[in-house]
Picture (spheres, rainbow, N blue to C red):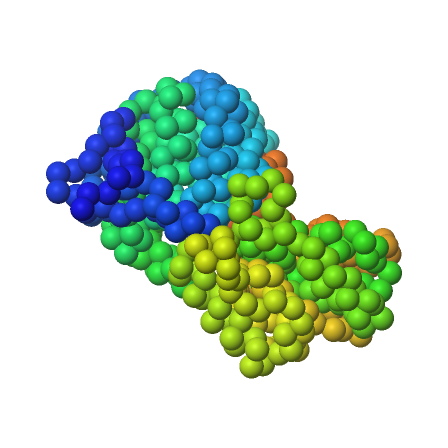
Length: 498
């Protein structure tokens, strides 16, 4: 029986197309399990056509003055502002985050596109003095060519726009492969750039599995840069595959983010922060607070206040503005999180929750209640990324132990400390092994004008957002201009002759 949901095609060379006899897949609302839309399961041939379209469009787009490219990005941001209510609702329906966060996802896209548009009048290089007379030295940025942007489902408009806007303003052309379970959001991203006037072939969309579409993109020799956000194991595979053809591969991977709560902290402020950090987006953020490291002097008091608040923490319909937490994103996510909860029940003390929610709306979707374990450092749930509404709480004696516990994991994305001691706060800025550190705020992401990324297994050293976002999408060319009208030899002494 044919599906009744709206079908969408691939976007290749400026045209929406559905290849004849193409296999299709559907995305599902995680709150209701109702199908949302139908999409083409792309093939390696589809990837080849997308890359060919991007390669053909590259010379003209590269020659387009960067401020003009910025004008097109500004138009995309303007259109997205108009469409924010509609697109935010699509984010919530397809991914499951509550409507305030769905709208926030779109707002982050708008903010970043506007920020990147300004780079069209910057794209800074350097000028430096020469060691020789009558010689000028500088660097310029040049685009890399065709780039692949492979994105996850948890920020289904924001993360794609982080990558696409930075790649486009730098003069590259793009093949975009989104997560399959948020393909409808990806269509809205591409439609925004299309309607803003981005030329055919400059941005292309191929939906489908990572094993087919992703692998074909990473393996294609015409793709010079791969920007990937996702899990660690998949990231390693992408990195190795890309290295075979010496591609630039930028990885943004997992996190096991700690909040350190010291004995002098403002507990009311920390309570609000931990609730949002741990259970906002149902814990499905790479920056989510997954570990709460609490000084023993305030451990029982704070944990009691936290569980009391959770008794009044509304979980339910993500489109209801009063809901604080919606479903997890998919059946696979639900299964994985429940497996970790089962592990936690064997190795730790369950303090709160720990169940799949049932009854009424809950029976229709993928709902797991907020869960808290009291555990020891070194347990699986204290060290492995769960990516769900599961918080591990660990008791420590002092600041030194707190930092040791915080750093003793494989990840290093976001970190936080709550304290009124300014000296200790500044020490934490240096001591915590993470790409981001917050003081008196939870482990959330960065503002768009600042770099985002981490250390250790969180990535391979690059950063997204901020002015450095263009680094992964540009090559640095060094230029020397000698206007002495004679041969000059750097590092070789002049014998005085002409």
